[in-house]
Length: 354
Image (cartoon, rainbow, N blue to C red; front, side):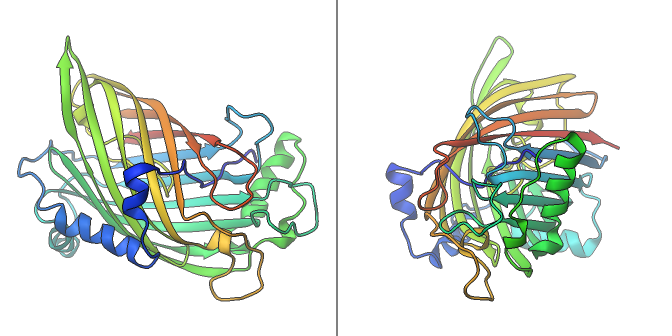
């Protein structure tokens, strides 16, 4: 399968300096920012939406501005998800959401995602020292969403498996066989199976900037943190959008990690469209797909780079309840001696309401 990596353009300047903290403190500080320093969200409520939303998403390094980068590092991501309508959760779930985020328009979201990672040389059967290990990750996700007119807050849990049980070998080489492509030969060296449990939380703000002749510009700053035995990191970034109906959502979805506007949206005009560009920086405390098994020593591993970042650009449209979005992401290197340069991949998402 033509696939794609989880790496990120290097955060620089004040952002990197602010994130230059011991790995264990990074997510805690951002969780504190999200839950505490951010303060209560604005009181105004967005439009109610009784319909659930189904989403299918694929990310792949076959779509790249670099030559010869297909099937290396973060090579493929697949995701399906369902997001509820507003304010129709069971009382216990609604009370938990209110306890975490305060009052807002609430949703609950469930998803299943698979991410595949390979080394640069996929035609060697031998273990390649100093290159990213083969790994597959399969995660189920549950998120609680709380919206106001100007904020979207998300808290959730991910659980699953890293290793052969995630099906990376079967999906990648099965797809290669179906399209007549060369199989990747080193999957016998993939990381061993281990259970995954992650906690995550973040907030996105939506700040209108200017509106002229029916076209608007807004900014979406975001903070996010996750901790667990898959990836522990803190992230900060911002996106600028231009278009019509910008108050319909909080940006486009991404397969984690990355700036994620989530799958929830409610069109505020007949046709919604926008183009966007954004940048984020991450402080990475731990990454099992780079550093090897959490529970076993001596497994394939590389030395991670703690400060990584990315630049992304793309477009989205909503029409008759269907949202289509495309994002191109350029990422800096995640580990020492990576040879990808500014790696990049494409992300296509399709959502519909039922």
